Image 1: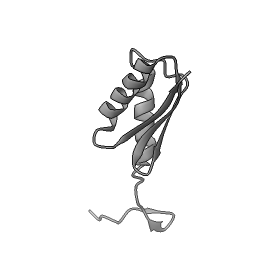
Image 2: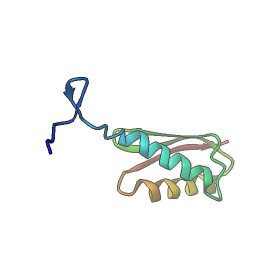
Image 3: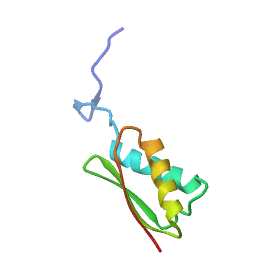
Length: 87
């Protein structure tokens, strides 16, 4: 049996590792969408300078705290900056 190095149109094949920031953004956004105690319809999740950033508006101050707790649970050791405002 002969094994060859994998190629893609003659170039060395390098599997995509994926964008970790995009994966983290999606995971936090999904967790906020299904979490109880917060209406996250107007909350935006981004990753800036290796930190999860929450922006947007919610109806009450406890929802801001809940969003931070949910994001920290998903982000793990990644810092979370909460810039959410109360409408």
